Image 1 (cartoon, rainbow, N blue to C red):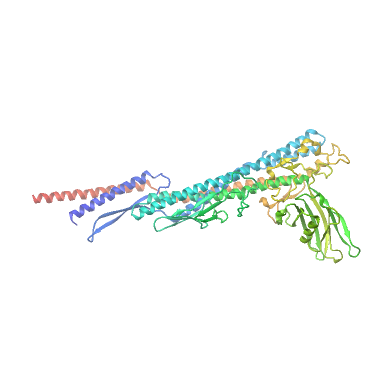
Image 2 (image 1 turned 90 degrees about the vertical axis):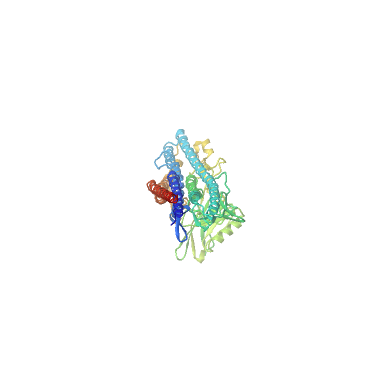
Length: 628
């Protein structure tokens, strides 16, 4: 090696050492900078004429495991979703209270029962009647308030989805801009490590909002897809839009049919193509998925529980079951027997209850015929009633009687004959001499609106400030939906509290008669009712059954259990995310001890190259002195 080659090699070594020292200094300075990864100097031997002439500096790089990164992003999305669950369910649990808390919805039912017991003991005591009405008003107000809070939380989720979509669009634009810069610098051989850190930070932020996957391209850019495979970015980002609704109520719901949807949805727009990402199931984890599930599933189910409680509370106190009157036609041996019912007393949502038996065979059939005034609500689902063992038939009563009878007959077997002998009477008979059926029983379940002369029940609760009778109508929209937010105490009873006692005008009920208060108390405490499985309590095959009080306590217990489970799941998932992040940091982060070792090594290399230059200089001086 000539002296000129030696000095050239040493100078390249000095430059490489200086660049390495600069890189180590930058690593140390950014040791605590979020998203910064350790940069490593790249050098290669410079060869000319078959011999080394120094080193060539290459672009600084980082050593990052793309597999570990994807794991972190996957778990980060899950963590974000569970954190949303934990936050919202904790707030719902606080709202519903504990079963023994004085502020819980279950306590409100217990207080109502206690005050009703006092009224039954002293029905002639005006203060006892007023105290009971105060408890009923407080119960209605509690349900109104809780329903309002749930809808406020749904609106909050809607707003959070909107804010998240805006953030996602910003992150996608940042990733696209950084992609472009990385491609340009990589093509010219410049370092892109810092830009990759910035891009990773944007991708990590996006992964907290939704589950995503990235694909590395040869030019250094990345393509971004949703976990379900929808393209979000490749060279240029797509546009995500959200048609935010500024107000929501219990009837607001998501539907894949845009004409039926009354909440916002996230649409992916790419040129002339648009995709409803919620309908396509693109959001499986991430904060956005959590907010969507809160808005469309969890909070509506909590609302359904309140609505069912309010509905059953109102119906339990007001409903009356009226048995059909025995009826027959024909002559022996072809006498057809059955029952007549009066359809004039039926309101929308009231039912005709038919039981018949196949003969021979003995198979018993239980049929619930529901009065419907809105034909668009038909056909009714099997879950229209909470009884898993009945056949549900919805009949449009908004038509002449002949049409009503024809629709009933079409829905029932030929062995059960339906007719209209006169007026509003509907008759159900077996097939007489054919002997293939027996009509065992027919009754109606009605909700009288009169305070007297309609049984010992009482329409204590009504629907809304308009004081509409609550009948459980299934017309669109079903009356039960959002009823917890509208339930009110009957103004006529507030104006005359003696209605709590007086149930008959002929003969006139004495003010000290405890018949009605005791009946109302039994309806609340002793009578077992079956509750809709749409509340998430019980199943369609085995619905929850019990008193109003037991259902209220079950609601509180379910919410408490869900909140505890969500908190536990979120805490466990956070440990998983933290473990992966710690592993990533240990592999790619800056270790001060390692950097100091590198610093010493580079200083030594710098000194060695400097000594080479000094030695070459001395040799040149010697050569020059010989020449003189």
